[in-house]
Amino acid sequence: MINSVEFTERLQKVIDFYSESASSFAEKIGVQRSSISHILSGRNKPSLDFVMKVLHAYPEVEIYWLMNGKGNFPNEPKILESPNSNLKPTITPPQIRNTDSNSEIDKIVIFYKDGTFKSYKS
Image 1 (cartoon, one colour):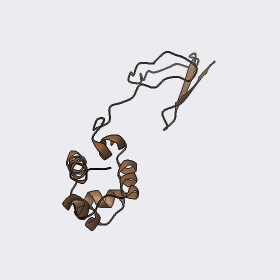
Image 2 (image 1 turned 45 degrees about the horizontal axis):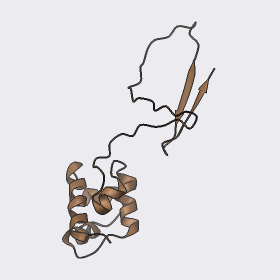
Image 3 (image 1 turned 180 degrees about the vertical axis):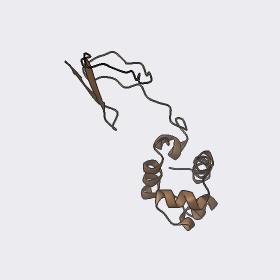
C-alpha cells in the first residue's frame, strides 16, 4: 500500500527538481491545479491515472521510486544490452566527424524508446 505522506514528499521533490509551480506542474501533466493541491495536502490519494500522467510527462521519474521510494530520482541512464550479444556496450557520446565522398557506412544502430535496439552492419 502506498504511504500518502511519503508519496507527497516525493511528488514535491519532482516539482521542485524541475522548478515547477503546482499550477505549471498540473498543466504539464494534464490535470487540474486542485488535483495537485489535494494530493500535496493529503486530502486525496493519487489515482493510477495521475501517476501514469506524471511518468509520461517526466520520464526521469521511476515508478518504483515515486510509489514506494525504492530506486533513484532522477533516473540514472541505463546501459542497453544487445539481444544478439552477451556484451554490454558502454555509453559514449556520439562522435560527429566530417566525411568525404569516399567514406562508407560500416554500421547503423537504431535505438527504440523501450530500451531495445537493432544493429545493421554492412
